[in-house]
Length: 88
Image (tube, rainbow, N blue to C red; front, side, top):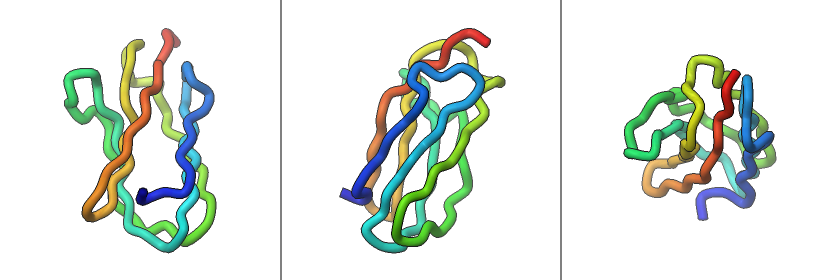
């Protein structure tokens, strides 16, 4: 796996969702939010993350209520987890 750990909180999310990742070594990662049809509705530009734990906050105010997937990708692999966005 590209990550040692991948957690989303809170879930369901209201105004923001926190993405916590732990890396066994430094990696370039891209973080996206996809809808249930697989369409990308948010992308954080690829950047380098050092070994260890990182927590990122994504503002969800502009995202309609519903079920989504947060996807984390390196150059060769991806992993995703579901998140529910509730009405603001």
